[in-house]
Image 1 (cartoon, rainbow, N blue to C red):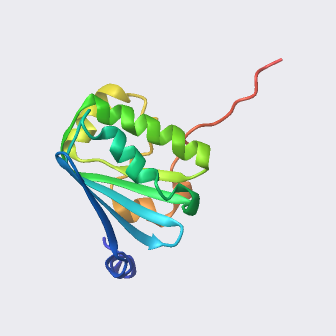
Image 2: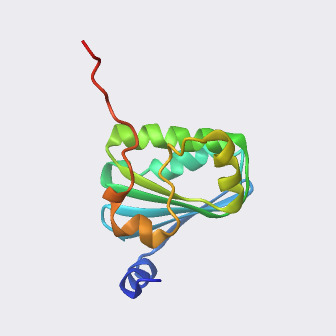
Length: 145
């Protein structure tokens, strides 16, 4: 079920775009501290690091990032490394994030992330509805004495 207020908010914001090899990246601000970063096409060794840099370029202004990879047709192992890097960098910046995968991303996650450590959501609405609903990305655990 789609939230009409959310749809209007997403459409009302201007998009930032970048083409990178075989991928197209788009960022939409849905709130001043929340961005949806989308990728379309292919994410592989040629552009995976640039995707991370693109997604994190406004990190100092953000509290939440939704990474929408539902338009990704090919997702190489370098893409998984990029998601791991994004996971570490968002934790370091204290940014909540959620991932909306495509079928090709989900396929690789089943192999590379069998414990489901990455914060995967089934829709943008779910990811934006309550950022606290995703499990903590990294948690410091005190050593036992």
